[in-house]
Each structure stands twice: as structure tokens, then as C-alpha cells.
Image 1 (cartoon, rainbow, N blue to C red):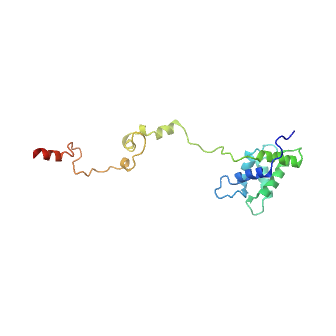
Image 2: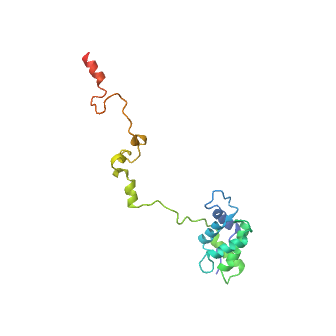
Image 3: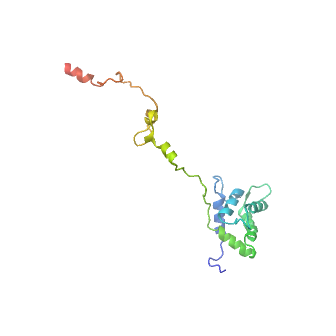
Length: 181
């Protein structure tokens, strides 16, 4: 098998490490990675193949390389974990070749957002959110375009003009008084 792409540099792997290290954590700096993100990196980059390397193997290796009381690993600990996983993933290859193949899987990758919850597009939801189909008092809360009217749609605001409600000649007094003069 000839390597046309050449060897993968450690900086490419470190870039991927930093992207996975900050995934899902707003306070993360990218210098240390927790166990959840380590497993995510191994799944997304196909280090876990289900036969030679499983998620249990990844958890065991993570526990081995981290410090006793720590919950995170640094990039140096990450490289030692990858060299341990490389011999399992690529059996029959030399250690250096296995590590290079494993780094080839990781380099240039970033976290996938597979399984992220999307907005439901069901006919029931569409029917419930279509304000043109509302009836009764709910119909009064929206204008014809479907935009809410705000307070005007929610409250019965009294008419303080001084006229009786249903009086048809509102605002005609001044014109009648001028006619009589």
C-alpha cells in the first residue's frame, strides 16, 4: 500500500483534538478533552470499528492515560492513548504505521451534529399553529397575516369616547350644531 498523501502531521491531529475538545462545552479552552468528547472523536473519526476497538476499549484507554483524580486529558496524553488504540485497531501493522493510519482517520475532522433534534413537520403541528383556522376569541388575537395583535387581541379595551356603545352617529355632534346655527 503506497502512501500518496504522505505522513499526517501532528498539528493536523491537534487541530482536530481542539475542535472535539470544545464541542458541547462553552467553557472549554481546547487544551483538555473530557471522556465524552474523547469517545465522540473516536466514533466520528471511525476509530471505533465495533470489532477490534469498541467504546469500552476507548473508555478503558481514556482511564489509563488520564491522571488518577483528573477528568480530562491533555494532547500529550491523547497521543499516548491513540498509540495504544492504534495497535488494537490496525493489527498486523507496525506501531508507527498503525499510528499514522489512525492519525489519518482523525486529521481534518470536526464533530458531526448527527441526531440533533429538528423542528417537527407534522400535519397536526401545522394545523395547530395556523392562525387562519382559529375560531372564537382566539381568532381575535391575530391579524389576517397571522401576526399577533398583542394586548389589543387579549383584552377588552373599553371605549372612553363618551358615546353609548352601538350609537351610529358618533362624532357627528359638531356638524349638527353648525347646521342649526
